[in-house]
Image (cartoon, rainbow, N blue to C red; front, side, top):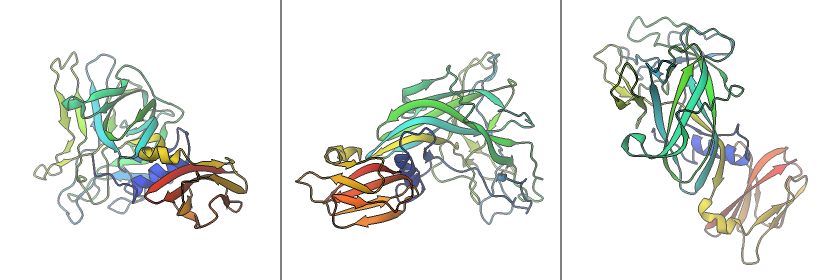
Length: 354
């Protein structure tokens, strides 16, 4: 797990968007790391229109060493001669509850030119704790296909090796188009550290690879701890088990760097779980609202202030008096969040401006 950014940064914004978006399965609540390195290679070549590159990286300022792995295997085949799984962890912060409905992964099949997806199956498991060290399975299995074909598709990126480092670099190409693989798996998670494990089946029963988290100027993010599991098969009867995802570097003398698995979680975040008793005392109505949003406060609650926050995380209204009714007629239609502060307590209420 890389160091996850909380409400002061990216992850906090993702959680906020999920909270405001209600129960929509398409609301992104977590992102374990990026893949795109931009529309231009390190050597200055533009990506095809509408696409970006995902270019294996060198450390900023290092002109002699780069990453060498384009991707890692997470496939099984019908003959049971190959069976790989990938895994990485994420943390549900204190005070939050994540109602997850979808998991999103990424992968490519070299040379695939089909109109659909290069895979026809996706299996997912969620563990409380590290599955390598006695973690408890809380959702999913390695037999059920949860692939959502309609939600999956072209990720609009091409995976390439480093085009400048080590010199002369590797010429970019478009044979490794990255696809987005979305799986429907519903699970509600309380605060804690969890691991997601997944594998796919290629539609042609062949190979397929998952690129690691790729950030410009970084060969391996701090705290990276992605893993690959080699499961026993007819050709590999011994269970080889879990091993860290490592990029050994190019040239071979380059230092090794641990890697992260890119994935996203979709669903809904319920905030202030620990303060539900306070929040439960407060109601807002009508919801959806057209003009005046009424706030019902118990007589013992003395509100200090209220803020209305839009789906981008921007405070669009601050209320310092007249808490019982707030005029929102001028707000654009959409989802909003009302923060009500009373002493050391905060209530979070969602509402929709119609």
